[in-house]
View 1 (cartoon, protein in one colour):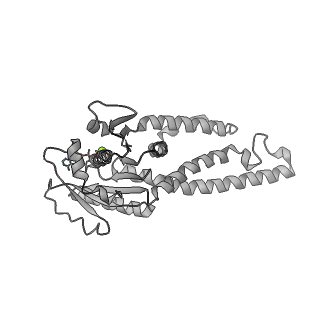
View 2 (cartoon, helix red, strand yellow):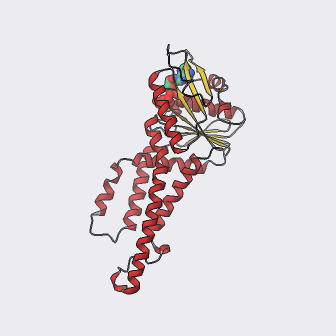
View 3 (cartoon, protein in one colour):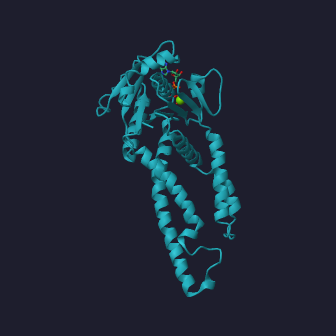
Length: 304
Ligand SMILES: Nc1ncnc2c1ncn2[C@@H]1O[C@H](COP(=O)(O)OP(=O)(O)OP(=O)(O)O)[C@@H](O)[C@H]1O
Ligand SMILES: [Mg+2]
């Protein structure tokens, strides 16, 4: 896999259109492409296919598209997590763990976690493609998904440390008085289910952090229109990405000419290429138009 490209921006600015355009462009150049949307409001289908489809579908030449089933992943994720946690902590009978875990699916952040795990799985499974293009949901949700591996990494590292201390203290107590420690509790790190679980989570999180910060592979573009709201949101994206150490490679000012906007984005984005795509009065949905429209900006994202 050469590059993974993310399109970010406010709702309705043209993220899906830009993602699909780039995917078509690359496919036209005989590249193999995996195009995925993690937007729960699926709409790649509407552009690339006459009929809705599920799973991964071959669209054009070596272009494969998929609307990632976020809802399905969320169900699967909560089910698997709950099952594993019940198993891991089954000795903890004092608290009503079953009930606590059953309400977990309503906890804040679960959707973001499910999307992060879905992304990780899809990216790993499509390493054989030349390019992976990701269409994202509007900014707020996407920045949270990007932030998740970074905050989780800090937590997991601390939890692993604390868990090791617990096991070491437990084993010290067992050395003095073996009866003081419940038989089910592990005395060695390699026997501890919780530590094992933390190790599994840590692997996923590190994969995501490394992938997102990989300046050679990961490319991101902000899509915006010539209006104050999408411009302000783009500023927040730029700040957010910078804070997380995620590369930002290009800005696409889409639908130029649609609004008599007076927003001057060049001053704020003076440290990266800003590309303009005209407003297509008859819409921008045809493959040929899309390929033409993105010719001016693809070079800002990939080395051809
Ligand atoms: N350059 C353009 N000229 C004309 N119409 C365009 C252009 N770019 C996008 N559009 C149209 O604008 C609408 C919104 O575009 P799109 O769905 O790509 O935005 P989005 O950022 O993905 O939106 P959402 O946040 O809802 O997913 C669509 O109808 C699309 O066809
Ligand atoms: Mg979209």
